[in-house]
Image 1: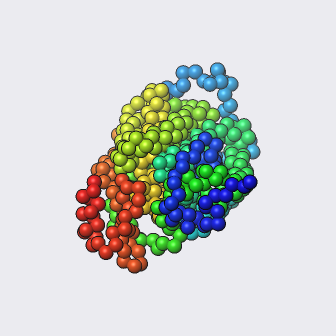
Image 2: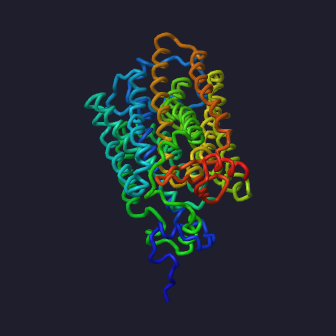
Image 3: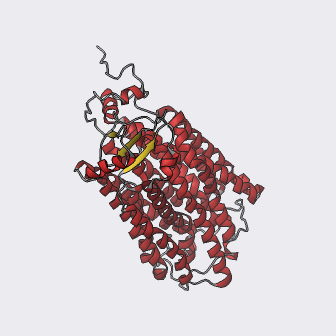
Length: 523
């Protein structure tokens, strides 16, 4: 006899509003929700790899001997070549791979072009995914990015303008994917599993960075740099097919989910109101200090990460005279550590929440630990460039510890305003993406000046000092309590959601001042 579920015949909005369901714990191992997280992880893996492979192939695409700056006066390299004999390491690229005469400033523009496109689509993608579904938005983004990556070698042959235009279009596709994916966790993640589910899915970005850096140099030397784009573009098309078959927007419409797991997810989100029919309270968002705190912290952290992603391969190969293959391995090492720390930190955050730690405390600790040590290690890096072991260790720790921000500020929108979390996550990442535009452009300018004027490491510290000046106020802002977010609806009611509560509080006809006093009195 077929078992009937109490949720049969109901749509997702009706079920989420049904408070009579009891949240029976469902296993996480081999569950559908973690399967969804793995698929999102895979899509993040390939899209991030497609994003940064040009940073790896740039070493092979340009004639670097004409523009190579002197980072320091050290000539120390690896004590032993990985091939056993320096004469055995491959020195030349395949003859059919074209080489271009792009100076560091032009390279910086190429690197940052993709971020201009991402800024345009990150914020709208979250809102769009909430309206039409994550499956459609992220699927279109994955397919578009993969096709454009396949076109990059041809665009480079057509000219610099075509290459930059292709990168901008690719950025628009990636923005749809990065911003739109978080809408899926509004309906798939129980509150005490949000850190780990988001951590598993977002960690694909780190693994994609690691694999792209690790394999990019090897493929460039063995097959030629165009094949890097062909391989990752083709793999993206395969991931698109998997996405279309296996991913669904909510557990109600999923055809293969276990009934126990479906009821567990739905009951845990029973009091969460759907954003499908709710207008965006833009004015309230603009006036919200917690939202601005989240945006500024994301901005400063992305500044740090983009510097490491873009210039780690060039830094290692130039300072220590390491060929592209070994440079790729050492450049990938920080992201291997970051991938592990991201997963462990996400599980630790959820574990602390189950032990009745305050949510705001867990988020703030993760954010501070992800920013302060990382920026400090990167600031020290120019002074230890004469020792490659210490330099690579600091680079690894800077990147790895930075991902402790993932269970902190990066998922805070799900706590502050779950009904509009997809839009807020997209908007905060769009704001943070401004740093991704500025970082490579400014870095390229500084590197070009180094080649002309012999800029010293003290001048580079001014650049890192700007990051520190930006980061310290962010931590002070983040230390303020992120307690409420006001959502103004059309009927002039105010609905306040506290991150330390597990329910919405409808204050009805109370004034704004009375609402705040009521919440503050309860803390």
